[in-house]
Image 1 (cartoon, rainbow, N blue to C red):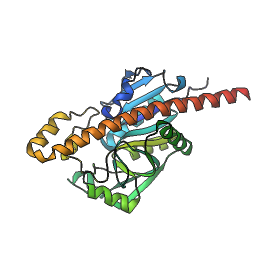
Image 2 (cartoon, rainbow, N blue to C red):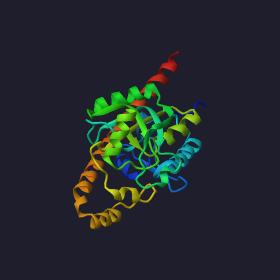
Image 3 (tube, rainbow, N blue to C red):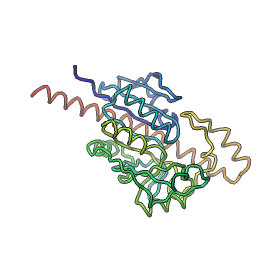
Image 4 (cartoon, rainbow, N blue to C red):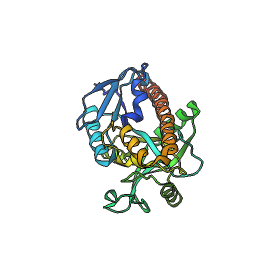
Length: 284
């Protein structure tokens, strides 16, 4: 019996994929996932092809563990890393889709994750993971159909959130990366090791000119970190940060809506392509 092709989206936070999960048309149901990860499965989307959405939690360890579980238990045909990202080049507004052709790992050395405010060192970007070209093309056509802004190129994964605009700008200028995040390279490495075609599409929240409010570095690492209390405590100590907090919240909402629209559009297009391919094979 031929295995049924399946599509999987992997994010760090439930917040990033919450709208997609709640979409009634696709009818996602929660299934068990270990280590605090959240997993949802539907057979109603992607032209009838099974689709899984996994929220692993923040950072490298959670991303690797969640993706390894996904590969071993759900056996996806395609893995798409998605979620929020920070912009590293001018001209990319909040909600812009960063479609990666290649993902690289970078940081300030082996202890960078333990140093508060550690700057990524662009010259140390390494460990390239290539995205599947046919999936990149499908992502382009999906973004064009949705009429949302998108950029294609290099995506950088760092061991810490890059909060400062100056750091993001330096990373973009030196490496040419279009966006930065914490998990994509680790998801891609697991997919590559398993021989599963991989794609990364992130939605920009903070642009290259925006400093992220500092409380985001203090959020719990799980897929549902409590955001309200850390934000309120941070605001109490730094009242001048209110505009930044409001801007970031609004930008996250825009990015979240863009991610949901992309998951639906890409899933339908991928499912249609799989169905066409299967039909063509059956006619031979």
